[in-house]
Amino acid sequence: MALSLRLPVITDEIEAMAGHHQMLADPFMDFLLDYRPGEPFAAWVERVNAVSLGTHCPEPWLPGEFLFIEAGGVVVGRVWLRHRLDAHMAEYEGHLGYVVLPGFRRRGYASQALAMSSARLHRVGIEIAVVTCDPSNEASIALLEGAGATFERLAVSPTMTRRRYLLATSA
Image (cartoon, rainbow, N blue to C red):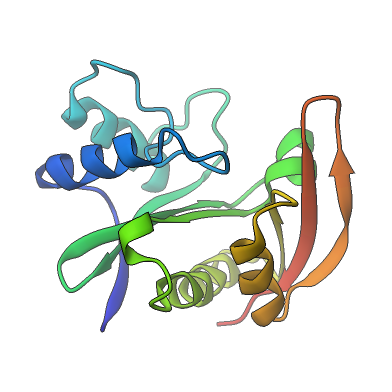
């Protein structure tokens, strides 16, 4: 099935909020970054799209793109591409974060989204992307290693441990 990465739109509210609530219990990642409980969905869309379009990047966000992964007209996940990293993001989060919603896993969407994200990062001048994952996230480990990412090392802080990978981007 054809996959695309696209900006969120207001009409995504029902699917996006369902995905967000589904992922609240996931130990690895949230779905709607910086969504504030009770916030109008339209306000969230405006805020994340301003970052993606480069019109406003509030602290502590970094320049990048928040995009939904869409397959067959359905939101199946999301990616967060960071075009620049601060010290914390460089060590523990990297250039790319991704989530495929549980009902859509094991269909190749994460692999396709990773390849498309890699191409987008390459277009903004990132030749080697840092990508991290939780050491217990076997699906992400398999995805990254299957995509040719090289395990660099564990990044350890008092509150978290991440596996750091280096991924050569391509056009």
